[in-house]
Image 1: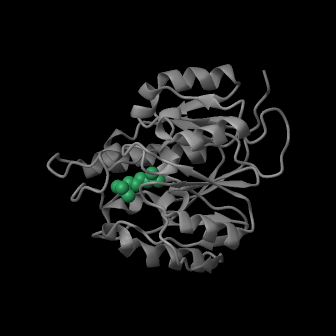
Image 2 (image 1 turned 135 degrees about the horizontal axis):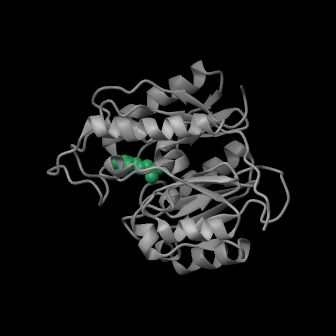
Length: 280
Ligand code: ARG
């Protein structure tokens, strides 16, 4: 069994002080169902503390009133090599987040690229080794895949999502070894939920990642794939017990963190985590 090495990560998070479910833009959101903002903050705080306890760095963007989904910072941009591509939300409810995120990147010293096409950042763009996996079907457009390829000068593989519950790529794929240019056993491997993809996308995933962990529908349905990894620790929902066992078999160390309240907004651990690559 390979000895998995933890790699230092720098993340951007947003405390869910204004979290609630007031509109519905994905099948998880039911505005009639009450939410508990204090509980959301407590659960989020546990994730934040867990990242710090394991040696990671977390930057914070101020939550803004009237933008209850801002806690899902993965949708705030896509940051590689010290360059931050901003987002253009498909959903009008979240367009107010676009400028605050771009302003944050600029203030933090990142080169900011204003996007032209509609896309929702790291929710739909995942860096795996040197390749960008890009999701479409619900939120980000196919044209945005061309744009992200131009901006970052990397190979982009387009994947089509077909199940409305898994509307962002980070709800159906978890990047286990998101480290560029590092070899070793299973370098840059992923886990994914096969039933979330169309046939052509599945063929691509099978060819490229023959050693991928295939996650069950049961674990997918509790947002098990919406997990973050440092190459050793995989931060995941405590309800994804099958995925937890699969990870252990491969030498990873699962770190369960419960974000049940934030799941009422259709988001989990990875949605609340944006990786800041390059620049310090
Ligand atoms: N309510 C948010 C939305 O529908 C949840 C975003 C989840 N983010 C993610 N990266 N999957 O936009």
